[in-house]
Length: 423
Image (cartoon, rainbow, N blue to C red; front, side):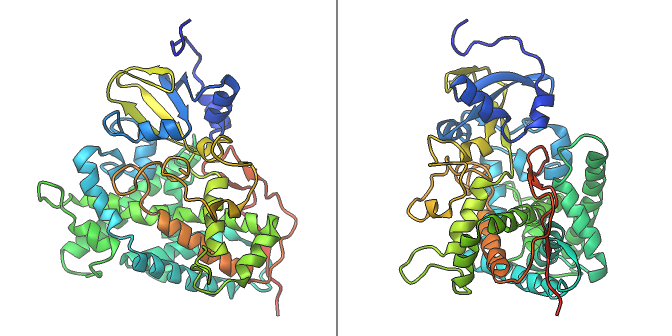
């Protein structure tokens, strides 16, 4: 059989669900290739890994996102009509809505809100017993991002909104009751965000112009028309949901600090700003944040469809074929990363990774490609919370903190539990 030729295979969806983060990279490395053809979700698919594949995958001349994501994901995580399903000029124009919110000043303001929320939450932990950090982080982030985004949130409603925003990403990729809960949460969250958009347009609330609520409510597509209410609500949730999802990384940050006390000591000693040190080097907390993003699992892969017949990394891809780009495996590629299975923040001190070898939240240029524009927020929030955790007096009781790689998203099985001594 010629190199790159297809052969009949059984559907590998069960194997993918059993090991979603390593499904692609393990098969590629076992076969000595960066690409292979398989069958997933009852149709042929090509799986690719590595920076070279990522660079081609992000080229919109070769790939489209239209129809690439299964409907069960669109109807939960992304929402119908959201930016993730657009291509070309429509995507670039809509993407500017999100990029405009990510100025250094606004990112710093969100980080400050999260720090204050962390401090308020931690004040109640002494003597409380077992504190599940993942749950605490979700609540802190929900309140902080709603304030930052200009979305009204009554204290009594905060637990409900936290649960809804969590369900959009935590359970969306599952099968059974958790997925159904995610679908219900999407409908409820769409109604909530749609009401916010409606009230803004009616003049009943007036969030500042630099907030996500204002930007989503008044965004106009290239033809000059306002987004319809549903789509504006979806895009507002596409700001709120990813920030709440950073709770996954914050739980991993706690996991990493516990495993490597040296990191905790270095971070605890830095100044409160978390910026560059006196030598101009990045602060330990920011190096740590980048390594958390590289080392720990977040998104396993992203999907697109081929615009034309092509060959990628030796694999023939016919027009319309779904292609999965391996994110987790690329972040652990031994050809790119020295000792990729070691947690080593110092690797980022003298290295500026390319847009195609550090890809935890997508590959390419966040301003124009389908890469998350909120990466500066993710780094800032991990660094800010790591500084707080590194200075907090707490104990880590016996628990199952192993990272569950079958879960989407992966997490320490316990959610990472701590105990803060009482006074």
